[in-house]
Image (cartoon, rainbow, N blue to C red):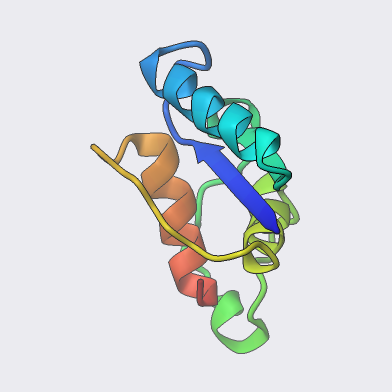
Length: 101
């Protein structure tokens, strides 16, 4: 089973990361195929509102958000656990909303 964990906190080593790494460790011990991503270190270009994705289903910017979108699509499912949407998380999910995730 492929599981993608996305840390949307700007603090790579903060409390959210500690919790997510703990979950990652548990999943790995159960034999899951886990990929962990920190949004704070990915190269993501903010949506410019060009709406090209409406017709193509793909963002015109070939950034890490686009690649992460495809990793998530082919994972076991989408289950967001969000306490508060920070700028990083909101930016990437707004972008994905435009292309249909």
